[in-house]
Amino acid sequence: MSFLYTTFTRRRALTVAATAVTVALAAAGCGDGGSAPALPGKPGDEKVAQSVFDAAPVASDAEIPAGSTMDMIRKRGYLNVGGSLDAPLLSQQNPVTGEIEGFDADMAKLLAKYIIGKPEVKTVTIGTQTREAMLQAKSVDAVFQTYTITTQRATQVAFAGPYLTSGLAVAVRKDETGIKSVTDLAGKTVIVGANTPAVTALPTAAPGSKQVAFATDPQAVQALLQKRGDAYVQDFTLLASGAQANPGMKVVGEPFTTEAYGIGLNREDAQFKEFVNNWLRKIQADGTWAKVWEGTLGSVVEGGAPTPPAIGSVEGS
Amino acid sequence: MDALTAHLDELGHGLVTTVHLTVVTTIGALLLGVVVATLRVCPVPLLRSVGTVYVEVLQNLPLLALLVLFVFALPTIGITFPLFTSAAIVIAAYEGAYLAEAIRAGINTVGVGQAEAARAIGLTFSQSLRYVILPQGLRAVVQPMGNICIALLMNTSLAAAVGVVELTQAANNVNLVEAQPIAVFTGAGLAYMLLALLIGRLAGTLERRWAIVR
Image (cartoon, rainbow over all chains, first blue to last red; front, side, top):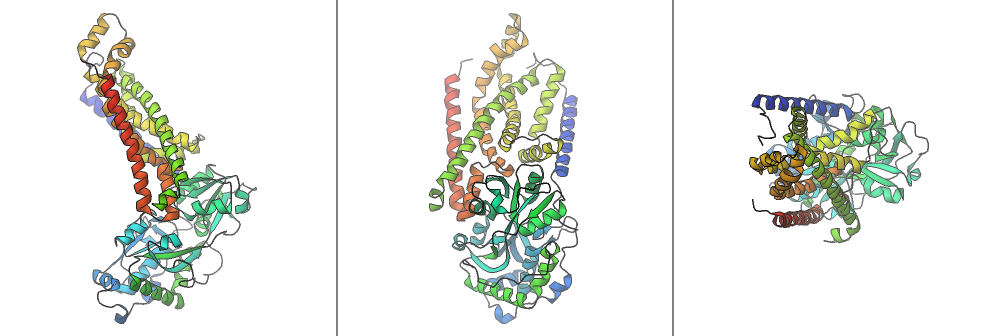
């Protein structure tokens, strides 16, 4: 379009492009600052001591028959785990060391230690939408991802455990006085994490509440502080760690549901499920389970380690 | 299949939101696209640079990053839009940059002689653009603009990340209850495909209807 255009030299085009990139980078930088730090408590607090892993049990050869899934994992030399990298206290990658820390991550390491003899875990980050498909395709050996045991899910995958129970609780902004428990949420706008049990639990627990779902926990906390909703409903331990990191937020009332988390396994492999359940009984009995709990979730929850849930006590496990 | 049929209500609401978001955003993006394309060919150097910077910035940032920035960073300086509005503004601004480039390509297909003739009979810049250049230029790029609208439809699914319950988020919610990802997301995928085919057909029809012999 030479008639409308005076010549637009290549050099100028480059300058403009460079400016655009600078602006873009600056904008992206702001974003990082805007979306609040996700690290709960004091970093380093929630680390489970190496001695716990050193003392953890290892399966005898008799428990690992040739040709079984356990045998295959032992030969491979590492355990393929489906999990998260962004769940504080449960499974979060430490940006400094690159290690994945938290209750779920440490349980995965202990299972790897039990099978292989050393805590070698390869974590595949999977979304909550793809867990069933990943297990059915055997892309991962086990899923450690606060995987709530439900009967619908149990038709697709097998659950070992439960290995942890928790519940949903309510968090509000510090200056909020009208909301004291989940029953006060009727008619309110409630922030939830996308694909969390809160999405399905809220309509029964607080009829008439309006949901706004955000993809990650830090986003949801930010949304609460920015008044995009009156309350944030999430797993109690996550909220407790969020409230510790963000003074503008507090947890009100007691947990109003009981969520039993299981280890997701392939449904066809009853032998592996039995093996994992036996391992869970073992680490519960010898106190390893309690030590891991104290080193992770225990850093934000008052009181000592709870009694671990009984294996197979939940419908679907 | 039960997983889908038992939740037609939720999925239907999601679909309506997706269509609503797509229509509103397409209109916004088209208007913005014409304005930015005009800026990029206008005779004032400053305005041309504004157009170029706009296109380069918006095209070179991921849409998800823009959405998260808009939703979470703006409230820290005291500006808060509702979530649906936020998503519509950001997607329209983003796709507007792509549409502007398509429209500029269309403008470039119009022969220089046309513009010279328009200037010769005394039309101003805006008159020649309005009566001579744009009517011909836009007709040349109906199909590419249709493709961008299809991309826009797909991109509305990113609004799920900032709390808009459109089709993808609705499918997520249904899957959470049913744990049937393959059935649920195949269903949602088919709905997206039908919408995309519809846009494609519409673009094809408009292109044939508006075709002119040059």
